[in-house]
Length: 433
Image (cartoon, rainbow, N blue to C red):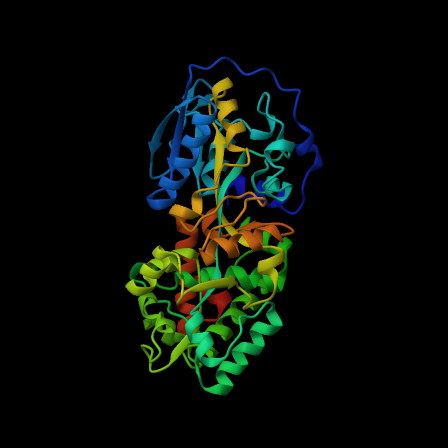
């Protein structure tokens, strides 16, 4: 396990007041040339939305921005013992990439930028974001510019109305609704599928993360992400078993979790079909927001028109109320490479209130700032995002925002073996390290 994850865990449990206090003692930034080079390791609608917001901030600061879109952040050039980036600002939704650059000495912590007050920069997004990218000295190496809940529960309002069901507001109400659906023989509570070619088993990682946070707590969850608690530790074993119990017993699997490995993700949409792919309707899908790309055309068309008659979303209550007090999120973070007055001006503009206001118009991601208004926004996902973030006591990152592809692949393989019944969770993890 690399040093960056050890550092992440060591500081993610607390907010360091000393980091917030670093504001005015840094040297003055050198003059710039009026252009800021921004490297963006994002793609699709998210990249377009974030780029548009950066451009709006740059226009407000009267700066020229040059954008470079890459698959992953570029490695720095090394001049002697000094690592140097050929970019001024680095944006990615994989915070591990920024920690690698920071360890190489190629990033300047945003909380020590000349002329930037971190209290102001983090005021609107909330100081609980600072520890997520804090280094060993308590300095935030990056700041969030967009966020997305890693899981929400999707439902079909028309199907709920037909059966007289109300959307739950807490974990107890959710558990009661699951029981009521089964008592009524109305269908399956959960739509669930784990088959997805080379990514089969991948959704179980998100389920596992939710249950680790809910059953073991935020401190253990952060230590697990950092590699300080192994994936075959007793706390993680218990979470895996609890997640499998929900999936196996309240879905099309009908008690046999192995059945989920042959159910494709694209087949988990009978909540929009009153007959259902498997002879019964299902009522909930617990997924990340890109789920909306898989729903039938008629539902997507409704969403594009802004009426959302057949799709809505609310926080994930399958494990506990942890989604409200400590949501698991994915986030786009910005880190600073080269420093000059133009870069400082752009960072300050990106920390201002308007930044991120138009993100929900182009993507299911939203601004990271709590105070952002949702007035006039019809997307149920954007509303849930902001409601949850606004009530959050802290935030934690999802495994796919922190772990390497190799680590995720190993856990995916363990998930397949576990769901298939080939091994218990601890054995499945040990066999796929």
